[in-house]
Amino acid sequence: MSDWYTNFVNSGVGTTISKQLGLPRPAVLRRYEPGEPLLPGPVVVGTAGGGRLRDTVTAVLRDAGVTVLSPVAADGSTDGEKLGAVVLDATGLSGPGDLAAAHDFLAPAIRRLRASGRVVVLADPPAQAETPAQAAARQAVDGLTRSIGKELLNGSTANAIYVPEGAEASLASPLTFFLSGRSAYVDGQGVTLAAADVPASGDPEKPLAGKVAVVTGAARGIGASIAQVVARDGAHVVAVDIPAAGDSLAKVANEIGGTALQLDITAPDAPQRLVEHLRERHGGVDIVVHNAGITRDKLLVNMDAARWNSVMAVNLQAQLDITQALLDDGDVLKPGARVVSVSSQSGIAGNRGQTNYAASKAGVIGMVRAWAPRFAERGATINAVAPGFIVTEMTAKMPFGRREIGSRINSLSQGGLPVDVAETIAWLAQPGSAGVNGQVVRVCGQSMLGA
Image (tube, rainbow, N blue to C red; front, side, top):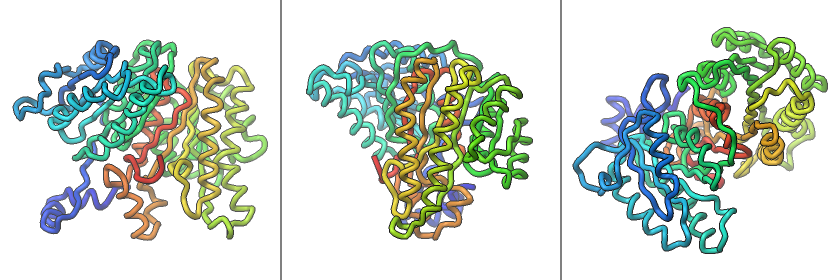
């Protein structure tokens, strides 16, 4: 599946027609391809405030093979190579006055940003500010980053990373993710890091090598894409879905060299059956992706109990029960495990006719945040990914007008692809993402709906 309009206006005849009619022309996004460089051009790194992370950022970028330019090279002149990314180290802000330096650096640098470029702003967490003025300046970074994302053109994105003192070692994984093609449909987001024991970097082409991963709802759509990307990155995937989807499930598992497990995750014995399967067949599990989900849409006043209860059972209660069983077992969840739950933009913004679905997906976010401290105690992480409008077989069946509105009202003016969700999940599953815990990352192109 793909965004038909984006494909059309970027084709030969479509380009001509769109120019003649003055139609919007969404960019073809730069998505990750194994073997390609992290960025298509150099990076300029600037500071505002104290800027304590500049040396760390420079080292990470150079280790990734990226050319780092000095701020003088981003003075807004028309000479010189276009930039692949702009990174602002805004740690150390003491008050709103320090933000002028952010403007002075970003404005000329962004003018030189090439198509599908990246802007990443680093800052201290507002919650840890010592004064109201400091909190105001730090929180201002959120509005600054989101607005930049809405102003950028040609498929470029802007995101923020909040780095408390002591969490500097956790920076490499989120920084390279936001700069890479993996984050093509992640825009206007902020991730707060924590101090963690980050293992040494492995093979960048196979960051999940040797890992065992479970993906629920893996027979089709986003779940199948998750299974494919996680397997591409080196993991052995246990693909889980209901018996009725057995043929499709087997096909997905065979294509990626994984294992198919037919299981109704809402069955009372499902958590224990899954735990036993993982222990006996695979010696445990490193990555658990709670992707399985259903919709049973109706206005609340017309919704019967069956629609409400079935959605809650699949989308929320099963995640709670399976995760609890994994934690209770003690051994099956391996050290450094990663759990990633699929929420939804509807769980953040709400959606007409989806009270049951939105409630279940908001509940997923609450679950993730509540469990994060317990996972941190085990050296593990749990996070959520909240997709926006993703082009799938299901969305293709929506009425044309509703589908087009849903796919266009975001900063990138297009629907995302299942692989965009999968890439974000695979990043959160990496060992290097140890410092990302209890976070919710929206994969929505910075939709105009919700926060």
